[in-house]
Image (cartoon, rainbow, N blue to C red; front, side, top):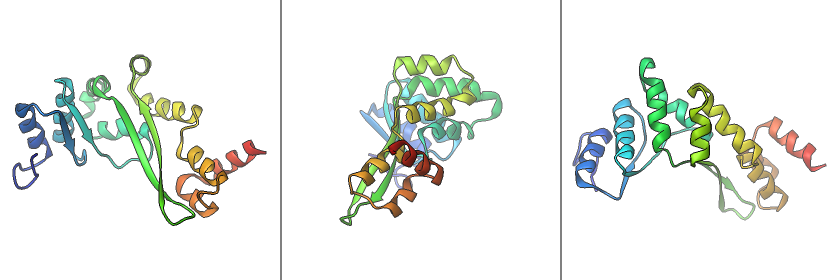
Length: 177
């Protein structure tokens, strides 16, 4: 285990140091800069399992967010490099339950061969919308999960606002009728 600031100067340096140590898992606190992002993709390409965080609202935002760190002339190649190593993207929110505890709701996408092939056949700027549309069609949005929790009496109506927009609430209410 390496500590940023004590053992290495930054995440990118830590990832490069980890590559020499052949770890089972590399954990990166947050992808915030190009150097860290490129080092993490390289780690994945050489076979290391890499966990990282990003501040995003849906899985479809992850790839576009990462690519904003990349110079425009490198984005398409980098997008395909990233696609080759992604295993899954999970976005989580914690909702307050009626008993005062917290319940996690998650939106996620698993990158299997079928999804990789579909995305690779599309222009990379469309990937995020496609990912989010899969989650919507499979009813795995935060809104869908929060609605089920609300119907079960586990969260109150005010907490629905944390997990969905007003238009999503109207859509779910109309579907329930």
